[in-house]
Length: 168
Image: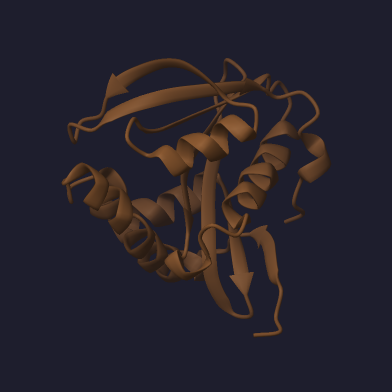
């Protein structure tokens, strides 16, 4: 390949690539749960475009190809929610997900008042849980998503995350 993966802010022009990547990357999760109606697989392109316009959305690029993505937003209570972290299946297991996680944490930590990060993953998603725990997240609860998947809610404090901020 010879090209390195770069992480940057997503643009409106990235919407279709993110949409296709998300659909591809979340197939493994759907298979784990025997449920192909999980939210990342049923999200509409218009909904994704709205997130691009409103939230912090980062992409990992290999040349011109979007090979990873993550979204986040900070609420009024200072909690930054991180969602839909995905990496192309051919690049999974090489640390790109962790790089995207650190980058979105850095970007969100730069927002005034961000005090903690929150995310969730399925209870059977062992690789995800390992990555999040290694990144310092602790389980703080659980819930059942509208699609029936049992989720673990994880959090960590936002301190010291600005070192990984990504410029727009």
